[in-house]
Length: 199
Ligand code: SF4
Image (cartoon, rainbow, N blue to C red; front, side, top):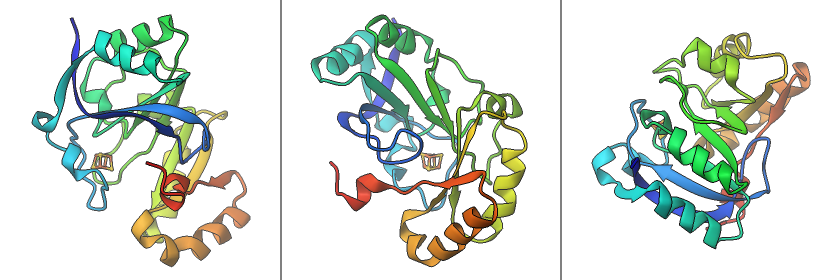
């Protein structure tokens, strides 16, 4: 039976991107092969830091909450085979959402794929084409041009978001809203769960 190393599993609110404001059960898997300097979940980088959970246990936790949507995140969740988990969740009529940097081939069946590519480890082109949502974390001005390169590889239906990196948010805010006004295919994503101190 498939097992996953889990950093944390909790019912909360999706604070950012297209599904902002929706209650969601988060499964944060351990292990990341990307290594962003500004990562706010660095403790999840080592897979050994996670606790082993079976699919049955995870689905049990989700169904005992009131969640109708699960966000699988990390770390980098695509380091795992996610087919057994997503199949079991969908059998319970739970929507499956993925948050990934897209550096590994995707597994699993997803109702929504949010791809947040990182400069230091480029996403696979095939994954960009599958994304429902492209989220570019803006740390400095060069991220706009890089974000446009990524946007050129997604589907026409993919929603495009620029999101200030939390610790630099004040510094980049004006540049972001000015950019979105100039290039209105983009929308702004904010980490509202941090603003609201959602646990
Ligand atoms: S991809 Fe995500 S988990 Fe991995 S280092 Fe970057 S922000 Fe952190």
